[in-house]
Length: 505
Image (cartoon, rainbow, N blue to C red; front, side, top):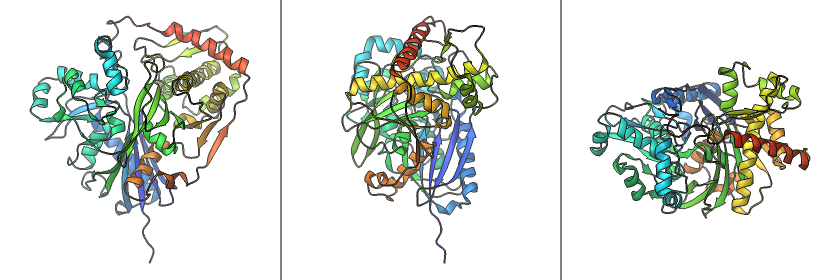
């Protein structure tokens, strides 16, 4: 008799699409599914998603992965979920219908509110949450919904609605409305979570006027969150045993389990995380202090450096400017260009995150001449991502006092060999790219296996080999310093461009 294969399902619900991976018992990828997600821009500076489309994208991606693997619903052993982080929504508790579209992490409609918070309570927010007062995080978005959606304030007080980030929304749907939970890595991205006490912060909830009764329960990152309802989730009845923010899931999937290990995920944005162990590294500016995960009652922290626009700039080249037909073309075009033609592109479409934290920066092109070609424009766009990663890595090393010997890279753009080589060159350290670049979904699946008891601890996962390609730096230090100097000149010209109070009406 042949025993049935058991699969671990990892779902990565990202900003521009949803990816699902099925791992077998040897942690080999047996199936992959993907569905692109539409972005909505109702006003300048506003970015929204349709929550129902998000849920449908999860179903479609998981279905594709199962079909590719030839997996039956009863062969799914456990499910892990990661998501895009600060994006949030509110939905009706009885009907399950969203009261308004999901407000995406890139959305800047609450920039002025965040400015006021920073002026009046910035130090307190930084101390309690580890975050900057910024429209990036969920708190001001939830506050906007409660104040601007008719009758929502009353419904929240009367417990007629539920609020959360996308993990709690997807969990609610996966379990047929039976579970409303999140994990500490996600809660630490809301600006409502006390970083060291590990719970919702009453003072922050009061400051933001958000009723605690609408928020999800916080559970450990790996453990039991609920069981999928076969009526709503593809016939699957399996425990959901992991939930993480996408960047923390990538850190987990890259097996950065020890202090000083760092990864960069190249997706819609590009996000660096460095494991700092059981002690939160607190710095006054530039980087964020966040939770990596909580396992077995122990919290692991990380330093976070975020780049808002990475893959989104390539998407703009394709959809906005129609310079390319698909992202895969950028590698060959960049290699053909040989140089950027003296052009530097700062893709500050939604402001600049770490280490600048300027909500009012805007996209800037400098050094443009009539001699610049399409290939050079594409190359400058790829280079812009690498420069921003370098700025964040430098800030991490300065804050932690740790020299980072290498970076583990993942995400869709990690397939671009030009970008990875240029990244190694501009960093001056090796860049390691795993064979499986869908590391967020991989991390969700691995964490689910841990939460399901397949592994007893992280050391067992560390013992599993990872196939990867290593890019070694070849650039001279003089060249590196010159290009970074020029990049910083370009960044200076992008800062504070939008006039406060005039760009988000």
